Image 1 (cartoon, one colour):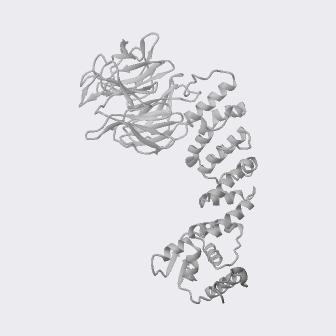
Image 2 (spheres, helix red, strand yellow; image 1 turned 180 degrees about the horizontal axis):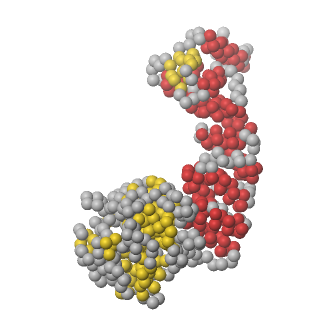
Image 3 (cartoon, helix red, strand yellow; image 1 turned 45 degrees about the vertical axis):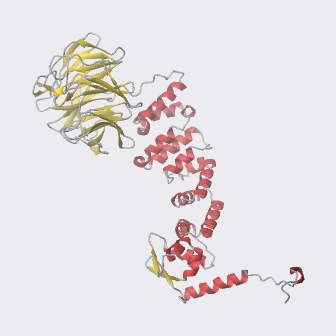
Length: 552
């Protein structure tokens, strides 16, 4: 043959290799099924599947990586469906694959895990074509589980245009939180009312794990387009809204706006109208109504004999050293157990100084000997603590939250009373020094009324409690005196309720003030003592201002 001759002068024979390729895989598959010339075993579900190394390494990224390590003779696949692996092996040997609906997920998982790209691409293409109202649940779950992002996007697009039907058929319940958030970020073809009802229904299937996603999606809704009657019903009856201050505020503002009422200065939460008094002797509690002045037992199992507490709508949070407990008070008369929550990161003492802004809770300074002091912020929804700032060794101080700032008043350093007054701005992470107390004071109580901070009782020296009280005007940064209490107290609780100041608990000298509740009338600058039915068996170790049901 003349090798230099032009190509067009030669007779060129073209051989179709498709028959050869098909025949080769057919013969190799026949050898595999007989176990002939196989040099590798795949173990799955307790069975061995003999295969040829060069075939599986050519078709599977997973096996290619395994076999590059050296002379490996077998591998065991765990947590993988055996039938799906058998189908994958058959596919690698050129056999057609067919899987019923119940096997779609297992086959996709096996193809993805083994890195058989062509098979996985074919599966995704098939599932995209099969996406209907009836198959949505299976296919969207499969896409999320196996991180098939392209298929997942197709499912989101499908759900966007079929949202109403899928919701009615209860096909949304299985969706994971990420999928639902992505869905609510699109232009759903549904009314705001339908979206809200579907969101509530989805959350009810696992409220503990899904409430954060509910909060996020709820804030994306246009509540003005939801019927006012439905919004009022949810405001009164739905715990996901009425027990969450941000959600409560959003719903309240939407109702006020719909009614044509200006909502710039909407009250952050229902006004407190009662006090919970915790008995250190019986580890029980009483609730006192500041409206009716009636008391009745509060059925609760307290976590310990020494703790501090703070109220958020529907719950009491108790703090004892680093331990945190949540007690539900949403259902009057129903026995409530203390549920342990995430522990504080730092030790703030036996009865930590805690305040709340209505959304977060703050453990403020205070430390036991040898422990670092700081301000920690607790997110009740996420059940998580984070340190905001570190501070000095202040203890026995009073704290209140006002206008985005935590005010620290008095206290003790190394056991000696101090007159310091500082405020910490949460969003700015900064401290401000204010006019000091006229006299150093520790173990006092504090309450906010308007723009003023009332400082009650405490110790002005190391030993003796006092009945003197002061008021700090945050607008002028100035102190003034008010009428003294009827009893000397230290370590008491002070609360602003319905325009007056209520004081309870603490010690009168060395005697626990078990039966003494005092009310300060701001307008008349006078104190009165309120009788209670408590006996000598009642020792108020802690108290909290709360919202009691209207019947009280």
